[in-house]
Length: 180
Ligand code: IMP
Ligand code: MG
Image (tube, rainbow, N blue to C red):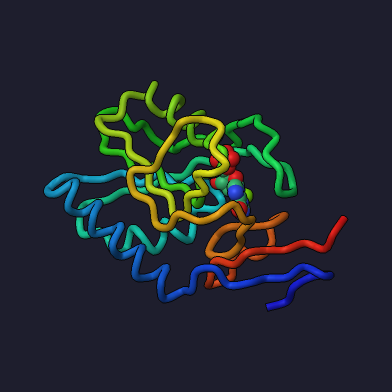
């Protein structure tokens, strides 16, 4: 893996642990929606890898859609402003929706998305997040299905990026930047 400049990566969660936990979360979803269909909505781009692995472990009728929002600029700080860049392709009225997020951080993105999606009258609206950084929360939101609770570190890999890089790492890693 090529790491630019003085950026440093340290493995936080190994691929095998991610794989095991994703399977457990999928089984939980399968149990909770037994006999029903679930509609997974991935929040682009960070959730694309988590969603791809998750959906293949769910033993139910499923469908998927994606929504893209921007809440961060190029770096690590939240601008606090959320905008829909790409909306859903189809209606979610009456569906069992699981919103799939890479990470819950301040909760600004999730609280905005929940408000927007709830207005579209899904039957059920739940949240699956691979990672949760509860110490950073500004809005009182929580995931129904959380892979791992992590400390307040900036992480990349398994879909998560820093300035669009590192999404292809198989492990979730802590990224340290050189002092500014
Ligand atoms: P929130 O609105 O602050 O909860 O942040 C949501 C989005 O910020 C996530 O979906 C990520 O795309 C991004 N984000 C938050 N923390 C991290 C991190 O540690 N690494 C990479 N992206 C992050
Ligand atoms: Mg991001």
